[in-house]
Length: 252
Image 1 (spheres, rainbow, N blue to C red):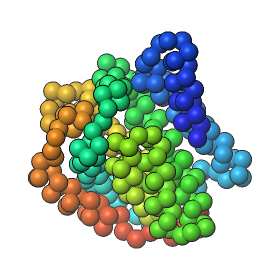
Image 2 (cartoon, helix red, strand yellow):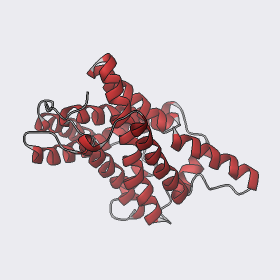
Image 3 (cartoon, one colour):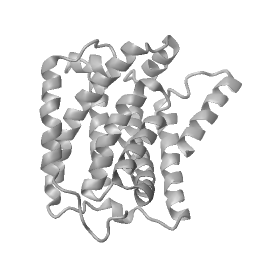
Image 4 (cartoon, one colour):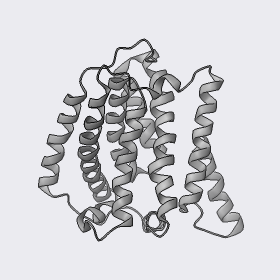
């Protein structure tokens, strides 16, 4: 993938010039993701496809997609946080990796961090995983494998085991949302809102200290009431969205 290759080049460049920190610079991360979006679009064009049909909602009542996405975002964010805590408990994150994340997510560069987390990452990862990978797998192996396969690719794009598991679980919801809506746009919205919650908590830590502790990987346990809320919000979001879209323009 273009973005992974660029991140590798940046890491090597760090070593050559003896200036660590570029890979944890949100502006460098944003630039690599924008290049990744361009690369993903180039792949689509190369194979004679286009993202235009996928940028439509594709539902008979598209307005219900928005509240469904909001419910799925809140429930998914809580579930992802719990999976992240369990993963870190099973496989403690090395100090060097922890320091890298702290350098990236320290909130000192809120604009660059916003562009990286809330704009570039949702665009790049949704176009790649749900725009390219999912339709290709679906055409050959069916919907179930396509959703699961694109979720695993989504998890792998994060390039570390501490994000892999919760990203993969979140990817299942994003893939299901892509199939249900017939578009990658609702997934981009959910992805952006999910990352936006973390961004808000990082940049404004005093607003909601417990939430900020989760975003900063400092909370050791998710409150039971939060988990119960997630168990209610997620099914409600799934039910609200309804049955899969059946439109001629929906790519298989």
